[in-house]
Image (cartoon, rainbow, N blue to C red):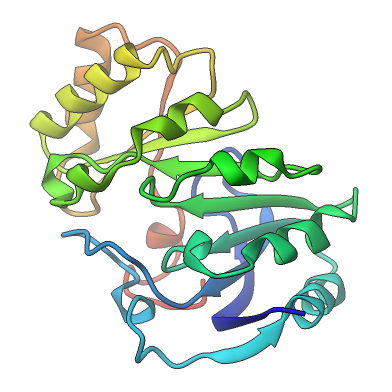
Length: 222
């Protein structure tokens, strides 16, 4: 049995992604290998972040007790955790549950593609303003499927141009869902809409982070 460093488990709505606005239970694991310029969960990313050690059975029991069917495994970077496959398999055994993994795009997905009950991935592609673009694992685009999502968090027009380049290079439209999301407070969403119009980006979704409008943008556990 594996143990995981859980910094928080909470129930809320999905603030973004395909199930935005739907109830979800979030399991946030400690530690991240990146240091994005706009990170809003930096408090959970270091080895010194407070955590509770929980087994996959304990996490699963907490999910079941919540009565919520959508699970978001996030971080930090959840795929950094050793033996995380055991947790994914445990949750995947229950056909009533829907597991989404938020991953930063730097962790190879190949080994996870072999899981029997594969979760959906919401994978970031880190654009230039993040300062982390060089860490992206480009091989991951091969393993994305229709149920998966690529999210481009943009803070500048340069970011949007790079996102368009990646979308076209890897033929993402029709392969998986594609989302643009603004860095909160850094770019006016109107600029993103105008960019989408000018470049005829059919099939791309603009999404604002609902939780940052419902609650204080600095709030935890929401």
